Image 1 (spheres, rainbow, N blue to C red):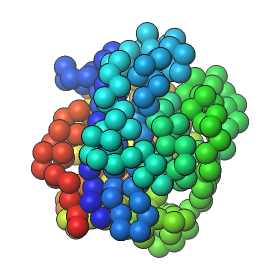
Image 2: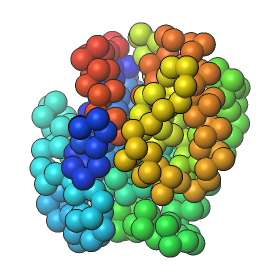
Image 3: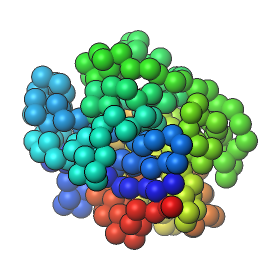
Amino acid sequence: MKVHHLNCACIQRLSIHGRTLACHCLLIETPSSGLILVDTGLGSQDLIHPAQRLGFMFTYVYANPKRDPSLSAKAQIQALGYKPEDVRHIVMTHMDLDHVGGLSDFPQARIHLHATEWKAAMERKSIKAKHRYLPVMWEHKPTFETYTEEGEPWFGFESIRNLRGLPEEILLVPLFGHTLGHCGVAVQDAKGWLLHAGDAYFDPREIHGDKRRCAPLVGLFQAAVQTNRKDRLHNQTRLRQLASSNQNIRIFSAHNPFEFEEIKNLNPPSGN
């Protein structure tokens, strides 16, 4: 498998250490399952018509995404010489609007996610859920493949293996807290394991170093949007343990621009 790292949005209103936030997605080339995306970032229509798609608050108040359609996963995949129809599967860390905006650019793709997250997104029971889960993102009625925990543990974490139609080297790793069914996505390539930790943390110092630290602005944002603080901090602690005991696992979050640049520069498209 060959893994590409894509930044599929620029969140201009939120920053960390002076840099605006990214939307770190993966594009995986596989021998038998076509192209696979891990998250989509914002889609082409989000970046052309943000207010209509993303809502007033996200567009103008706390995010202000850069209006650049070339950032969409669709545009970047086309720049690599592929067609949007080549994307057959999308594996979701969670269903927040800035992670699912590109679903409609790949209407034929099957969407893989934790069953708890799917249920939360479909029901939208709370005010917070109504702001983060926007049905316009899946009004094209994609096929959802939902899962609960099963399979052998992955480095001490519960895991969901054998995702339907996907290579065995791709699995879901539950990391609840940011949302009810939030997961990491682990991918084994020729260099070892990657763990896309989604929004389980925003500042690398939350999982590295002797003491947990976080830049104030993104720390406040995490606290404001979390669904379960206890679970979120517990899973950060587990990620800290994983990072310290298995330094060959490349762990990264969805929104940190420094992590994105570092892993993209150190890990050009990998695999066969």
